[in-house]
Length: 101
Image (cartoon, rainbow, N blue to C red; front, side):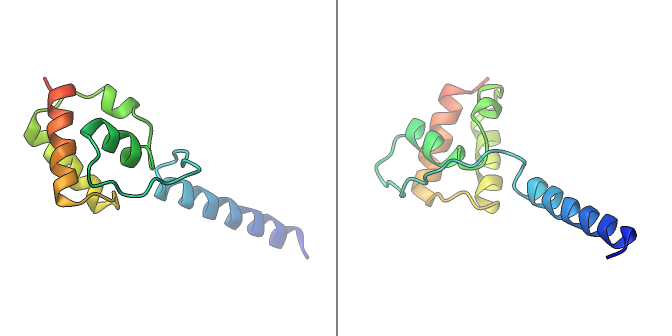
């Protein structure tokens, strides 16, 4: 294999790894995924579902109205956050109370 082929193979592999990191948000994934819980509190939902993709630092640093949290939770559901409509509402209410302006 020529030096150019080795170089381009390494470059391609690096780009694939980078693309995967960006697609996953570059955040660590937890080793276990909790099953959905229909009776979970807002705090439990935040811990169980939101930390699958990122740390809670983003939440703790935020101060949003209920409408803003609703938009955020909707956006996260669009990215794959597993929440039923009832769970999403519970989470939104919790976030607005705990992390509101």
